[in-house]
Length: 267
Image (cartoon, rainbow, N blue to C red):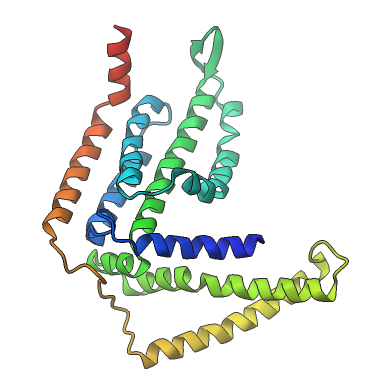
């Protein structure tokens, strides 16, 4: 399977996961969006050296993966490209911050190493929380929740269109690469001299597709508002879900759970 086909398959996989009838998928999308925003805000607020305190925030994605019946291995594989970028960004920290914070078996550990690990861990937790939201909530329901939070209509529409029709872009790219490989079977890839031409062709095709999409949405009466689908159930559980996790995450942010456990075991 080519990389483009794999990307298309991954997007369809997320849509299928969000349509399942699990307890986490039945939670109101507004509650899940609020908790996710709250979680990301608390996660990034940790100090760059507070790695032990940040470790307590991993309880949220672990519990949600269990409740949502999500495969951990597949999630890590799908998040791998983003994590590699974060690692490349933080890899320079050990060279700039060389202050020794502590020793492990006689080996000095500098502040740059700790800050790099903290940065990577923050990115992993924040991206995983966003992944869990997408994997348990359809994009239409997420957009509806954003409108409930009074996010501007134009921004919500852009989010929805980018997510929905990125598959069209990927399919156009697949057609272009297949056509090029058929005309140049002896070449392993696309020559850099024709990159501009192929990019122009994809742009023109995308503009035609965008016009067709706009006309179809207009004919169907789209006004930028979104209706929740499959959310006509008891909202009491959703309220308790939001209250519980907001309070629990605030407690994890204030109280260093893993540090306290380590001290108890050390005693």
